[in-house]
Image (tube, rainbow, N blue to C red; front, side):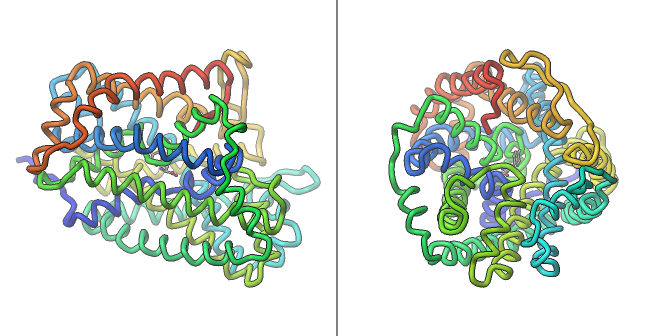
Length: 466
Ligand code: PFF
């Protein structure tokens, strides 16, 4: 007998869970760096246009496929009668698996820093690079050792995820996001007030509100595109799974707008926290986007800020909530696939998946500083290269899998299954799809071309665009 499919118990529960998936590390530490590099206000405008023109339609597409098929990412294509497109779903599942493996470890580092700022703030301030490297198994002398601190915290982080997923869609995911997301917004607002009231923050604010169009290049636009996909959790088919738990009465068009705007609002607020704070303390040239920025450079910011230790704890708590709510969405889409496709029990599937992902993530963490574990990569600019294993994992998902999965979905909907079906699915709730005509053009032409451009540029130049 088929079990009744899980459903979100409330509209707000669904919106918060989907926004929780979207709002993640990408918003808080990648976005501000991108906004800075892309020329401040000009980048914000371009990003907003991309979210509205592509982000919302693609979010709506994934949610509709999920609700129409009532199935996980892979099975959804089969249920809609196009088994040939299951590859897009497979990329989604495998991509989610790889992203979670490293994302959960970075989540573990964040957890370590929550405790670090509570107990060792003076140590972090005294040598922020040493503190970070010590967590990853390296000493300033160059000696290396097993990065057990990072690994233990990653294990705890993974355990929290597993508990949420095992509890199920309604009492796990939905309830967790109903607490986590409002907490995240409160932390965000507190940090925003702190940052913009720092003496010297005006320059950072002025930078974000000025439009340096001369800094904008084709690359900037593509970087904004890649960032938008990653940030909105589009292209990993997570939203297909989330849409499959959505009731037919829900207005998908409106919900997609709300989720995308919430995600974008968080990214912009994060920009208005980080950029002015770094301008006021370190100077603008220190703004970066990578992990070392969030863990090393920011220590100087908190050190110089009145009440810095307290705000440091709040900042890493904010990152922690953001990482947890995104990571659970990735795991959910894999677990949904395993339970539906192979009839695995939810608990067993969650434990197995989390364990394997955690182990794969150990290679990621070990490759950062402790051991020279390499991956392999190819692009036209550099030929075959052997980057750190962790970097290769990110290249694989950001440069290849996310765009491919998104492209597969666009081709499927635009040319094979036809946009009319999505429009009909959206209209199931009894509302008219207001932008149906525009949607058809976007899903058939604009989105596939934009995605092809991301794929081509990252292959030709060897740069990551998310
Ligand atoms: N959207 C999340 C972030 O911005 O950090 C990360 C993410 C989650 C990416 C889920 C992709 C995904 F499928």
